[in-house]
Length: 113
Length: 116
Image 1 (cartoon, each protein chain N blue to C red):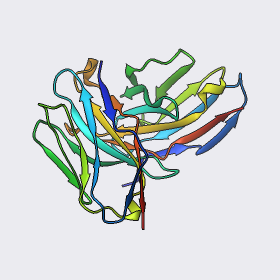
Image 2: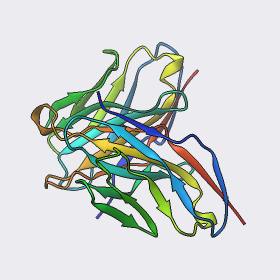
Image 3: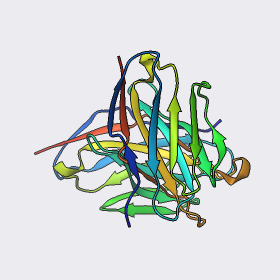
């Protein structure tokens, strides 16, 4: 079974631009969560999508948004990029059983110049 | 809110030494507890988990026991190898979110360096 895939793996943008990151969960998984990892703040929860609906949201500004498609693939968008948005963005998918294990993708490394 | 506290790193050990990485948590209710490992340039891999008090998670020689009385989930390994060098994250999952959602709260991570 293929794991969680994220594209692109690396991205360089400049301040003020916007960016879209993509995540394809494990086949059959309907829950997709996004996390931001930075040296200063560690791993922080952005949001979770389940069956195309945002189910939970972390404490990030409205510049961070996401969506999920009917095939469970998810995208997150960051508008008006700031230097502090430079981070590793990780996506995780979870199956539908009671088991609450989340499987992570390799991440997208975003650098904002 | 929920929080996870891990010991500061880096932790440097010689190969075959005993490893302990401390983790304590604050949470309401009965969270599930996890240890994730991150190798350089990669995402997170689940190392082990425990879903209720007194459960012991184990994998690849690593163990951790869910201690509700001390709100702890310390990671241990009897004999570390150079290949265990990585960053280790303790995390908890609170199932009691609106709509039954999933959110992991992570500790800050502990870097482990194992030398020959």
